[in-house]
Length: 369
Image (cartoon, rainbow, N blue to C red; front, side, top):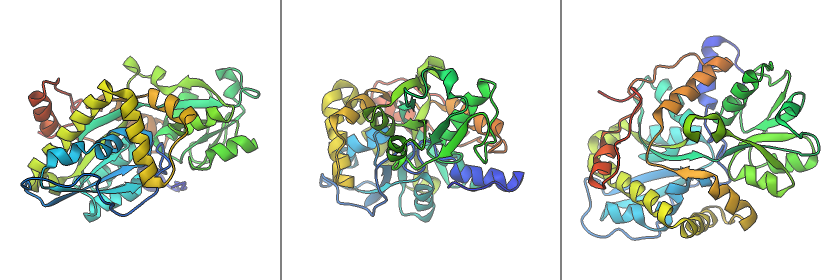
C-alpha cells in the first residue's frame, strides 16, 4: 500500500486503495494472517436458511473483537441454524475487499477506509455497510525520553501503519491542526511520518528508528509494554469520544439474494456485542483464544488487558464519523471528495435491533433510499 500518488486523479484511486482504516496491513488491525476458510468451532444445526453457507471475513486483531468473540462462542452459528458459517482471516483491507468482490467472502468485518475504497472504486455497486462493530482503540504512543509533551512531537519520527490508512489520515489531520506542515505523500515536513507495518512497528520502536507511533490496538499496548507512553487517545479528539474503527460490510449481491442470512449474522453480532458488554472478562478471553487459534499465538496479559479496555463495541456504525474521516483524507490531499451516498443499508440492522429491544441507528444521510 505504501504507494506514490503521481497525479490528482490517480491519487484519489490510490489513496482509496490504501485507505484501510485501521485495517489495512492488519492495520489498525493487526497480527492476524491471511488464511483460507477454517473450520468453525460449532456445527450447523437445524434447517438451513436461504443459503447453505455464508462466508465471513475478519482481521485477526482486537478491533474486530465482535467477530472473534461471536465465532469463538458460536453465537453466529446459533443464529444461522443449518446454514454453515465459514471463516477467513485477513491482514489487510484491500485483500478482504478483493475477496468480497470475487465472492470468496459474503460478509466481512473491516475498517471504514477500505469500505470507502471498495464502494467508491466500484461506483457504488460492490458493497454496503450494514452495521457497526467497534469504536476507539487508537493511540499516539511515544518514547518518553524523546517526547515529553504533545508539542515535542514536532521534528520527530512518528510511525503510522500505511500511507493513506485510517490512522495515517488521522495523524495527518492532527498534525495540520497543530499548524505544522507535512507533505502527505512523502511524509516529510515538520514531523517525519514513517509508514511502518504494524507487525514490525514494535521492533522499530525498540531500535530507536522511530520516536513514536499513531497506531491501533494491540500495537499501541505492545509499544507501551516496550517502555512507550500513550500521550494521546484518538477518542479524545472526537465528539462523545466515539469514532468508527470497524464496520460490517456485505456484498450487494448476497444482501439481495439472502436477506435472511444477513439478518441472522446481524442478530449474531448484536447478541455478541451484548454478551461482550455483560461479560467483559470472559469476552476478552474468548477473543484471545480465537486469536490464538487463528494465528498460533495469544496476546500476553500486559498487552491484552489495556488494549481490550480501550475498545468500545457497538452496533452503531457511527456513520457521521466515517464521513468525517473521508473529509480528513480529502483535506490531507490523499483523496478527491468521494460520493458516499448509498454506502449504508441499515434497514436489516434496525429490524434486528427493534426485535431485540435496541435503539435504531442512523446512517447520517448516506443510506439507501
